[in-house]
Length: 496
Length: 114
Image (cartoon, rainbow over all chains, first blue to last red; front, side):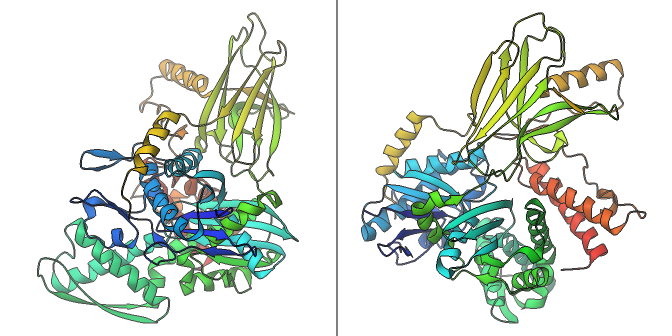
């Protein structure tokens, strides 16, 4: 049985690694002989089989193929309907995890418990959906770990480096920036920032538009009119993008499926870099945000580490080199280091100090006695980047006489402007009648190592209190019964 | 110096409604926006990008602002709209995307391309 197993459940590629007896992690290939499995599922119409991986990606039936499901892990309304059955993102992800588990266990033995990686800014529902997917695939999740943390763990392990490391993880669908400190065997995360919907697939879509424009100019016709052909051209643009990381110029020919002629596409690395320049500027702004968040200057970063397939783009390295004044380092295979780091994390999690990924607080009318100003604000109780586990308390006052029910909204977000944070829950506490306004209420938030939050509200006068686990229980979250049923059903499926 | 008075979302919205009842507004105040799923966003982001507005107008950058002020404003807006860009609501996400494009455009004009 493999004791320490890590899984990178990626937007475009997924991988499984285990820790060998010598303490070094290794990627376990799937049954198709591939080290990484495309996160694509194809629902075959004629045979009762679900294809996962390259076969699914290259299948060519877009109506029955699911790509990039990870982008929807926190969307309870996103359902994929195939042959009348509606599949949730967690169920689709469970098929990918099942393929990894079934294939890899043939090589390394039974896999029971795993560490799964998630983007640093994955919210509560996305994390829950990931755990649900694993449970459906009959995998017990030991811990979820943020992807850049896993990558940094691998980098620190393989390179033996010390000091402050900034991890720039530009994958297929997301960008994560994490800053951490390595001292001996101990790793302390300082901050993580993320951008959803910013990754290699955005660059592919931009190239696709450029191809379509050139095709229109040369032939006067549309390059694609249906999803099937659009997918084919998209695959071509992805290949062209990869070529441009190695060559200065790529020549290509494309045609639509209506016999409107062939167009010659002439792409240079320079024109591609121009195309994606604004997106790369966004990534630089996220790096700056992470530095601000950790109160660090670029000169205080000892190592810049590149993770994720999109960091193969030469311009990414150039931009970061200009910003930091030092050459960014790659941690070996940029596509594999997250899974490899997750396997190490499975054994060494006790030596890794993580932080709150977001600030938690409540809404309060804050009155400034000196200026007389008052405004509704997001009042933060636990600031982002507080080392976890942790617990913090703030004292508030009631706003009205004879208030019978105290309502405490639980906010998530750093902005002091209440318009730019999310209310993720509410605690109501009934208190005795006939009390004046201004009674003290203590609000305590606790944050555990699994990134779960609890909130406690105490009315100091009466001693009444209420504590809740802050967790999303709405649409999209399966009950225990549902999970067991779906897990049993999944075990009967043919997944190749 | 600071007194913090608990104010729940429902209470602040009730107060808004009562104010709106007293003073008939030309444009009704937006109700609290219930985003789908986990995120219950309090309101739409303040700026709704309009095609007629320049990137500077969208980012509330004025000619009198110093470079440091512009930088600080762009950082604040980037933090806000990068967060909105993850919204499940495609309208909010699309608006955030337009704002991020405006932020990058203003940055490039004032501080050069990367």
